[in-house]
Amino acid sequence: MRLPRKLFGRKKEETLKEKEVRVVLPEESYTLMEWKEDGLPCIGMLNSALSDFEHKQIFGWHLSVIIDFEETVENGMPSEEEREVVDPFCDKLDEEIKTGGNALFLIRETWNKTRRLVWRVYDPEIAHQHLQYLADHHRHPRPFDWRMEQDVEWDQAEWYFKQLRA
Image 1 (cartoon, rainbow, N blue to C red):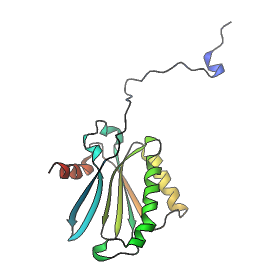
Image 2 (image 1 turned 30 degrees about the vertical axis):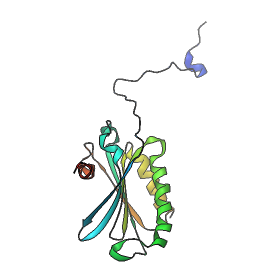
Image 3 (image 1 turned 120 degrees about the horizontal axis):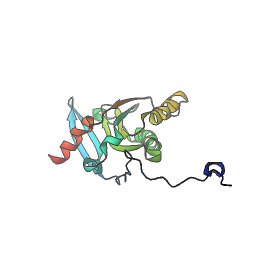
Image 4 (image 1 turned 90 degrees about the vertical axis):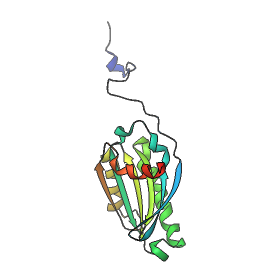
């Protein structure tokens, strides 16, 4: 008598299906960027490793989180004390959004009393649910908002990559 494999939880090793792809996530590499927007300085840390990333279409969602600073100094830049409050939250949020390889960090911008963090996301629902949980349970040191848009062609990231080539 032959017993079905499923009964004992054994499973044949599966090969990749036709539309599946194995993706090696690039090691993050940062480039400091500075520019002016509306007459105010903007400082960005771009993950320049993504400029040549082959599997961009897999991370087809553009997630932007904007955090409002409370204490600023000249030109809308955060005070040192404000950075001590906001930076650890940003670092933890980055780790959480990228959990399980669901997102790639793109850029961190500081401009006009705000910090903006941007990721390229695979599954938008996972990221959205996490951000909603943080908002609902007040697990953030400063007010923040987010926006997620489908952007398979990475049009919203292209400006940054053009600056690298300029």
